[in-house]
Length: 519
Image 1 (cartoon, one colour):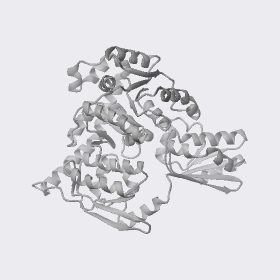
Image 2 (cartoon, one colour):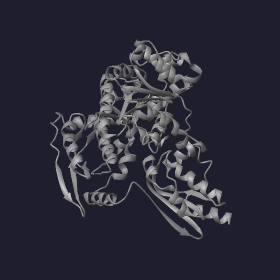
Image 3 (cartoon, one colour):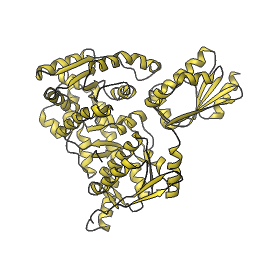
Image 4 (tube, helix red, strand yellow):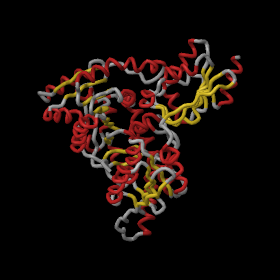
């Protein structure tokens, strides 16, 4: 695999030091010349992680943000607790890589390589000031532009977000910047990038949080010894105790509690594995079996007994080749009894690459212990949908998925009203390809139920569809009702405060009753 990641609570963290991270970022810039595909870099700290996850194992506090993290091109460990946790999980990250450390170092390297930077976000004029400060430190730094727009991520303003973002996107693209620093803070900067990435022409965008304030001297960094010892948070609290004490103490407490079960389970499974294998055997050679389904060939790859950083070198060399040459792959875990967080990171990377390339992946042979490992490490929500008991079931799943687009809908007439059923994944890419005006014309002059029973995921951009349908119906005196939202989609509506703006029913029968009352 091209990335070496460690999974912590379902989030893949790249195992790179600061200089390796810098090198990777500038490699992404060069890759853009041939691929035209922009990359995003996320700097993830403890606050970031705890705001993404719930206390329990099921669902997420912020499904869209979690999805962004899993699909990001590079995620750095911006927090010592994340580095400490990686050690307890047996796969230590090389070092903490913060946005405050990256930005000056990137600026320095940009001067050497003749690359330009656009500074976006922060409070009024903070981006401009940060750009000016770095120019003094690094003469010759090419500032492509600066901007501090107001960004909305909730409420009715989301309906107009495409138009409100358009001027700043136009300015960024016109600037010809190689790197975009986004300083809106988490999660605003990640959400803003995700909804605009298809329109951005910048090779690499990096969420840098409050780094502009550090550069401008508005917020002072802790002494170097506190940064290296992981005590920088104490220094930050001392500067602004009223605002920060709750964030840090509650955040650390929650992080510790939700990560502890995965650490304990890893230690237990490692001990049992080592007891059964007093000497660690050399990694087994993985086996590949090609099976012809009703339509095409499916590659079945037997996973090793121990899937960790030792064995993955042998295994994933083969996987890289299979992914390049096959559209359908099955991973057989029937011989696997132990996985660590680096092995899980490689599995997530395979999932990311295959979904990005519209290829299909399935798992078989998942026993109770592996499933529990996935649950404690917050990845079972991803793998559950692609896991089957037998190879025949996996082949049937892959054949079925081969004919299903990422997003689709059906529109039915029922008792003088329309039922619009949505299915799959409704994100920025699907909205860009969807002819919403045509769909609205199909709905016509009827009341409409939006049935989301088979809709698996929706992001902020996807919410535009609901706004447009509701606006159309309200202008002609008709109603729309949403129903059968899964837990994650309910959470998206709650976070964006749209549950107050839409009529939402628990199921189709309840939605029909709404119209009976209206009539």
